[in-house]
Length: 401
Image 1 (cartoon, one colour):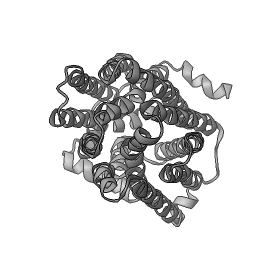
Image 2: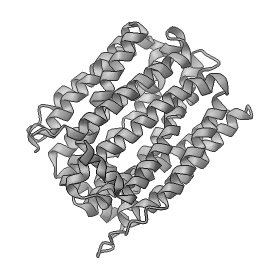
Image 3: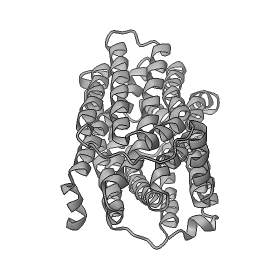
C-alpha cells in the first residue's frame, strides 16, 4: 500500500485530498442535523416536511447537472469547484440562520436547499474530470480510492459528531459548522491551479450536450449501470434520508441511535476504500454490480425492526460494498471516456443516477403515512434487488475489462 500512498506527494492531488476531507466532514454532520431539526416537532407533517426539503435539494441538483458538465468541460474545472463550494457554503449558512433565529419555515428551507443542490450540480462533474488532470493513468484507481478514504474518514468523524452536536449545541449550530467547511474547502482548492485543457472548437451548449450524450449512449455498460443506479439511489435515499430517521425517532433513540448507525456505515465505507486500492478484478463492473447486493440486508432489517446492533453491523457491510462499487465505477469512466468529454459524460451519469432520487424523497413520507413506514422500507429493498439483478444480465457490464 506504501506505493499507492506516494500519490499524496503530488501537490495538486494532496490539496484536492485535503479539500475533500474538510468539506465532507461538514457533509457528515449536515444530514443528521437537518433531519432532526425538522423532525423535532414529530408527527406525519414533520416527516413530510423533511421529505420536501431534501427533495428540493435533489431536484435542483438533477436539473442543473447537465449544465454543470458543459461548464466543467468548457471552463477551468478547479475554478468551477471553488465557486460551487462558496455557493453551497452561503446556502448552508442561510439554513443555519433560519434555525438559529427560529424562522425555519418550509419555503425558505426548500429554496436554500435548492441552491445547495445547484452548487452540487456544478461541483460533481468538475470533480470527476479533474482527477485525470492531476495523476497518471496507472494511478487513477489508487487516487480514486484515496479520495474515497478521505471522504469516509470525514464521514466517520462527521457522523459521530452529528449526534453530539445536535444533542449538545443544537441543529442550527451544527449546520453553521457545515457552512464553514465549504469555505475552508474552497480556500484549499484555490491552490490547485491546474491548466485548463482548451478545446479547439467552440460549440453551443446544445451541441456540447449532444456530443456528451453520444459519448454516453454509445457505451451500453455506461447507460445500463446508470439506469440501475437511478432505481437503487431512489430507494436507498428514501431509506437513509427520510424513512430511516423516522424509524430511529421511534425505535432507536432518535438522533444518537441514527448517528451511531451512520457512523458504523462510514467505517464500512472506509474499509471498502482501503480494499479498493488493491482490488483489481478482471471484470471490474461485474464485481461492482455484485457488491450492490450488499445494500439489501440493512434495508430489510430496518424494515422488520431488528435490534440496533444488528442493523449497524449490516450497514458496515453495505458501506464496504458501496465504496468498492464507487471506486471501480469511477476508474472505469476515467479510463474509457475521452478527457475532453469526461465531465459531460459524468454529468449524464450523475443526472441519470440521481433523477429518480427526488421522486423517492418526495413520496417516501406520504407513502409511509398511507401504508406504514416499515412496509415502504421493505418495498425499497425489493426495488434494489430487482434493479441490480436486471443490470447483471447485460454482457457489456459483465465483460468490461
